[in-house]
Image 1 (tube, rainbow over the protein chains, first blue to last red):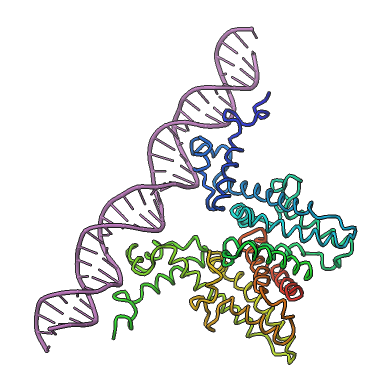
Image 2: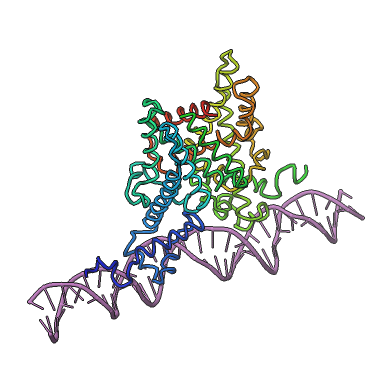
Length: 209
Length: 209
DNA sequence: TGTACATCAGTGAACGCGCGTTCACTGATGTAC
DNA sequence: TGTACATCAGTGAACGCGCGTTCACTGATGTAC
């Protein structure tokens, strides 16, 4: 039984524990609430112990952000899975696109802190397919979106010449609604209004793409 | 010459000076960079002097946010003004809608710190028409958007039954792109890519609304 | 198998920092008589 | 007009707080002989 096999030396799995603590803090208060000292406190460990596992606070935050993106992927994947098979491939593909957007927005609504931590932490699009950001299904939010767009093209529900860069357009729309309703001037919307706006927004995207 | 007439007692106009300092800090670092003590330092005044003019840090931040929204309105208004008169009212109205979106995105690109301060600070939609958020033209970003949507309906370029709540849909889309490219995973996009994405996004919205 | 040794995860203490906010105050100004 | 007075914008000092990060260290563990 090697040291690696049983997790980390001594503590068991301090890295994982700090990450979990970070997720909980992000859940409650977004990225700014991810505090390195607090994470060590929750892990029952001295503050500097964190530096064995993360170069600095930013490294912890990026790890938390990646994990949060994985959770967003789970929400999106669940929404896709719930789309009933209508027998009409074009319709199915469109419903999947809607589902991806609605899953993203559901995550924003249900886990605003994690949502902001996932998608408001500066990162590069080049890392959008990093496995650290994948959900249980093994795919990242970006990959899920790209997948349904590919599917739309495959079944002929979207002209191929519009495919390139379509991720950005679809993503922007749902992301904007998410941010405005969490953090911005749409904060005061009732759940019904949010629900309606979400539905109409994904419809608009499906039409406009 | 009354005390009010010449601004504030003694300092001249400490409130205005603190507000300006806040704007500069927001410009450089977004809402988190709006630091009450630093504002007083820049004004050459003791830290607690700020409390004569703002109840607390949050009050200062909200004032800065409102001012930043006014600057966003200026950018949008400039974009609307630059739309050439084509003689075709429907086309003009559509171009105005595009312009509102592009002006918003230009502001995000040119003043990312102010953009985040304007639109990422929790507020209520009920205050979206407060005069403190108006630009030089006297209208807030929300009012400008609502105006071009009304215009679209007037000239028959948009069915009336789609008008209600259309602000939210249009706003979400451009806001999302703005946030993703400033603060999120689209940070690394080149100016050309941003330009293209912006154009395509406002087209998508115009089509999808 | 038993023992000396190397490893390295976590410790304890301290650093410098800057923040928001409160207290009792001062003294230049405008004003009432 | 001259003087006493009230106002209140800004002062000076201090509060408690918590942060990220660095230092030299310790001691339980796995391992080599």
